[in-house]
Image (cartoon, rainbow, N blue to C red; front, side, top):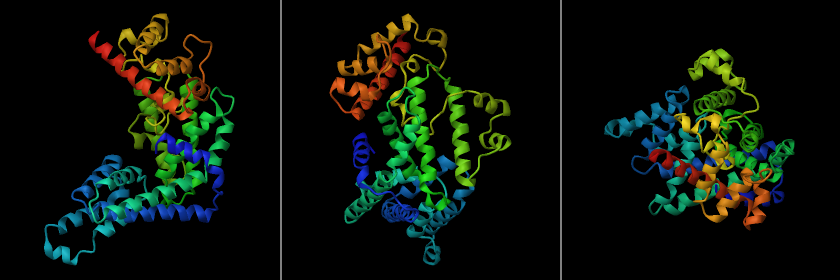
Length: 374
């Protein structure tokens, strides 16, 4: 979902009534039904079922969750090379599609893949596939819109912490959308219960990126991500968090490694860090993965580093330069929020954030190129 669609959902949420539990369940069932039908169409294409299996295996390795589906898939492959088996087999494209959608795990990567294939469907099924995709997205959007008030409720709890509430609502809404895409009714949780965590993580991540002057080393942030994602997966499955011993077994990390990162205060690593990079601070651009002396943390944002940054920023378009300067408080007393910057440059809040994100990516590339030639 792009930023314009996010804006549209937020702007029109009052028109959508709050859902009862029954309505919430019905929407989730409609999403799954549309995806079941779409999977049957998409997976008729050559080799796509194999790609879906690869996506699941890459995500879950040899998880017991996949056993039944992979067993059916292996049998389906076998029947393709043995006609007597094919005539007597109960495994079909339809049964595989149903098993795929009804897996009790995060299916969002598979769903994204299926949706991405719709435009490649040939006639006469292309219009039908497109209508199923539209039905899925329409139902997902209704589930999201009906819970925007939950985002506002959570965002207001984090007001006056250095980030504009409107910006927190924007980021929380992205977390809500991610929750809708990942939600699995088959696991028995209410959507609002599941979405609460994703919304809160998105908002916390924005606050940490905006306020914190501390850069977590890459290996440490990776470890935190692994621990937090494992804890959340475990909670989704068993409705409780794992013990320290269970975490050791699930992550492969030592006791001291887990305890060391748990002592890092006021830091939250998002389950979807790439999605919420928009508010990344400039000090992260200067830090090299190889911890080379010329880019060490001790020298970060000293006068020479600020001048180095300014030289990089000069290579950006003028409007992007202004956004980077204002957001990071360069040459001014304090940084501004995207909501405060947007009127100054004459674009929407969402477009301001997009331009900032684009600027950060450009600065990363420029910095990397300079380091390679140094």
